[in-house]
Length: 153
Ligand SMILES: Nc1nc2c(ncn2[C@@H]2O[C@H](COP(=O)(O)OP(=O)(O)OP(=O)(O)O)[C@@H](O)[C@H]2O)c(=O)[nH]1
Ligand SMILES: [Mg+2]
Image (tube, rainbow, N blue to C red; front, side, top):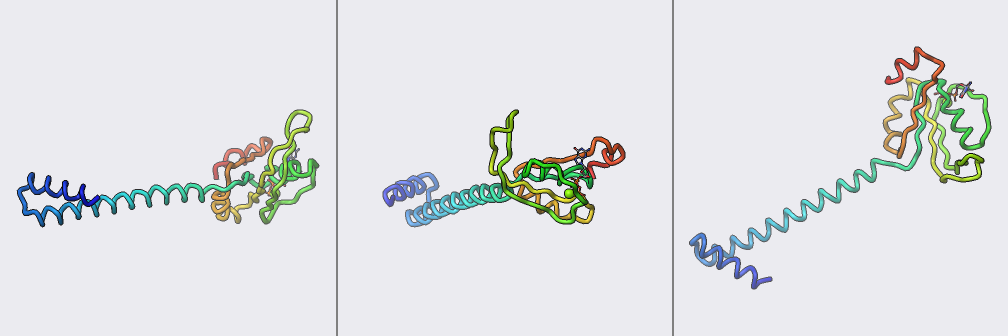
């Protein structure tokens, strides 16, 4: 290592025409700066990797307007039954296996499913929920034409 530094220092000494001690100091400075830059680059790279991993959860998030059938789908997936629902006021989340395949004989998961209320009051909180989601299932009621139009809100 010191050998390389000395060689680099004498190269700098020759090319810049500075004294040998000045060349040595310059070489050390260059080494220090490159180490610093490398460390910074590593930090930025690993930092962004951690952030992207954190910004995504593992849940399947059900979003959509009031009455579009999110809670109905949630219980259909979990218990395989039709339920009578009322407009939800809080999110329900559960981790379960989902029956798949034509004969419902295969299993998917376990998968965490979140049924998030469509009520306007809860919209702000939906953003926090999105961070925990791996995928979003946005539901619309195809029968309700006026609501379909403002579905983007
Ligand atoms: N006919 C029919 N009715 C459905 C279907 N899915 C849901 N519903 C009914 O639509 C109504 C609203 O469904 P919910 O699942 O409560 O709607 P939601 O999206 O959870 O609504 P919020 O909790 O208010 O955000 C209920 O009366 C359900 O029984 C469907 O596929 N067909
Ligand atoms: Mg609901």
